Image 1 (spheres, helix red, strand yellow):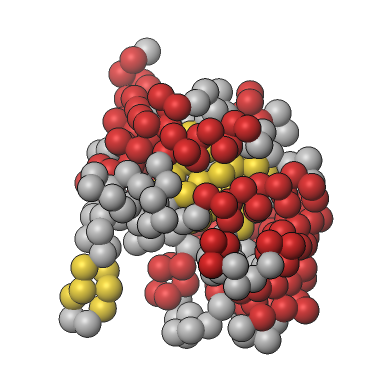
Image 2 (cartoon, rainbow, N blue to C red):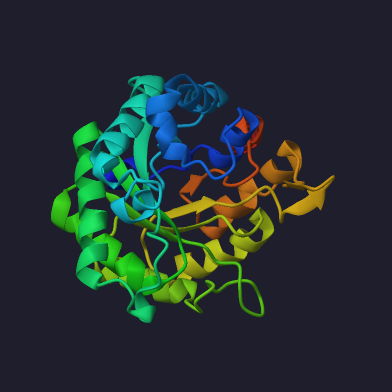
Length: 294
C-alpha cells in the first residue's frame, strides 16, 4: 500500500471495539483478544458493523496482544496466534475495499519506573508486530499510549520487525487545557518523535471528546507534515444507574467531523462509546460537505 497516496484524501475509520464487545457480553476482566479464539463470530460482527457503516479503515481486536499484557491471564505463549487471528478476522470482514490497520496498545508498564527492562518491552512489541504483519495487516497503529518513551520503544520495535506503515497515536486529555498525556507529553513532543523515527502518521485517540481533539489535531498539524489520525471518545464518560456511559449521540459526535478536517485530520473515527451509527453519521456529514463544495 502506498500510504502517502492513501492518506492524501480524508478517510473515515471505525469506532470503538471494547464498548461494543461489552454490549455483546464480554465478561468483566476478560481479555478481549481471547475472543479471537473463543468467540470469533462476535469479533467479526463488530468489524462487519463498521464496514457496513462506511469505514474505509478498520482496526483489529489486538490492542492487548503483547506477551506482557497477556501474561497476567496466562496467555503469553499464545501472543502470536491471538494477534494473527485478530488480523485475519478483520481482513475477512474488510474484503478488498477496506484497509485493515492492526491495533497495538501499551504494555501496561511505565518505562521510567525501571521495573521492566527496556529489552523486554522491546521484545514484546517486536513479537506482536511480527505476528500482526504475518496476519496480513495493511499498517500498524500504536494507540492509546500515555508515555512517549514507551511509544518510542514500540516504534523502534515495529520498524525492526516489519516494513509496514506505522501510525503513532497517544491519548491527550490531561494538563490545564487537556492537550497533554497523563505523563505530561505534548502533541509537539509526539510529532517530533514520530518524524525523527519515520512514522507514517501521527495522532490522538481515546481519553477525550471530539471538541478537545479538534484542538489537538491543530497542534499536531502545526508541529509536523505527517497525516493525522484522530479517534475521540463519544464525549467524557458519566455514570448512569451505576454504569459508565459515553453520552454523545451520533449526530452530535459527527457534527465535529468538518472541524477535525479543517484542523488537519486525515483519518477520522471514534474510540470509546462510539458505534457504527456514529461512524455512519461521520461518513454522511463529510460526504454532504464534499458534495456542497462541488
